[in-house]
Image 1: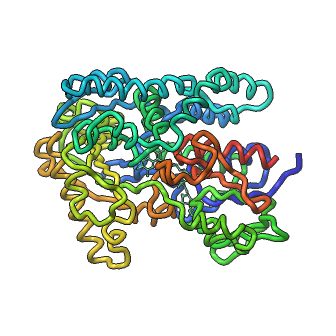
Image 2: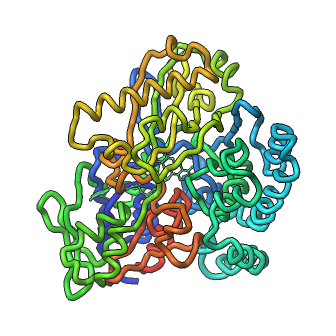
Image 3: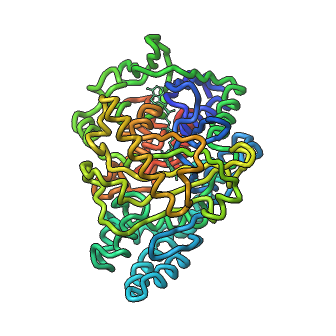
Length: 503
Ligand SMILES: Cc1cc2nc3c(=O)[nH]c(=O)nc-3n(C[C@H](O)[C@H](O)[C@H](O)COP(=O)(O)OP(=O)(O)OC[C@H]3O[C@@H](n4cnc5c(N)ncnc54)[C@H](O)[C@@H]3O)c2cc1C
């Protein structure tokens, strides 16, 4: 094996995992990160003694994550806490612990629709059950040799069944399944169409049920700790992590990646891993766009990305015990089910008065993430892409007014669950999709790479693969954008495949 010089753009979970795997093998690896701290979407910050996740609160597929930590010798450095979700609406209030429990709660909430609820859940749970063998398991690509064959077995045994179901539901979204079983503009129809991402595929919905109830995890110490631990290990293994170092160009030579330019300085490399936004990689960073077929460039330009999110960060004078009396879970998802929401319409000014939202407390999981006797709460709601003239981007005053208005609206609405919330706030801040775009470079603040709507799929191959190759030799995609549905496990999968391709 010859030692190579490798440039990685981005220090999210994808870039950090790839960097660690490659540096561990003795390659000369440099990670270039625009921001002044590592982590990308798996990051957090402290204000007035309160720690907040920047955005990502949890991830699924503990098997994939734990295998990564084990491979990197970091298993004891990061701890996971299982998600505890409560679902609330004017019609129901229950703990989300299984697909079957969800079905029972809905059948009780909508007794006149019991048969329709059962029929709808028969479809969802058939796919969800078929996906069970993947829950809690590492990916086969995380192994080599015999290990890979063994890991492949559980996939192979359930493969034909899953494949058949994937084929049957290909192109169908949660809206199709809701239309089949419920009348439009009714609460159960609104509930099904508002689970997860807008118009998410039925396979995604089934995955949501398979994972969220069983295999969905918070990082006890916070996502920033995870990123710092990975960054520290990378450096200890000889890796060079450059913070505040945006890459402006990917250099190519004779059709192959040859290095990067950061802050006007060129760095030669045998291979380049883009562990950052996909659109920017191809539309702005590559020095010679003629290496990408024009149809491919056009497809990338027009491809729809996953919706962004609005986040409110609150430090509270409530104790954890007091907050827990209202939340009774780490996360509460509240859905009014009173409106039909159109996430493809960026012009509805009342979106945040109508949409569902979730509340999550980090200090209930780990009290040391808030000052003694206090607690923290984050409120999140999905936004239509480029809502309200893209949040009045470029007009700082109107942007600030809009951001403030949405923050206040969500705090007021959260009082449905936490009474008097507004009077117990010691610290407050908010992030819009533009904030996320500014901090991570992800197009339109896309939270999880490409759109989850199967009509707008970027990759033909479906949901379960990671496409790390590019038309430029030696340029690889090591981010969640290599997957149709993005995500932390997707970014890790990309990192492992990149590390295998760069021997
Ligand atoms: C609110 C929210 C909730 C989420 N919930 C979940 C969930 O429940 N489950 C799940 O699996 N996933 C979830 N995700 C998605 C998940 O966090 C991401 O898919 C994953 O963390 C992406 O990792 P990444 O390494 O691919 O890229 P990113 O984390 O986006 O990292 C990219 C890095 O590249 C840097 N960068 C960008 N451009 C440049 C440049 N030109 N030069 C140098 N550096 C650059 C950025 O600053 C950033 O640090 C959520 C995301 C959000 C925002």
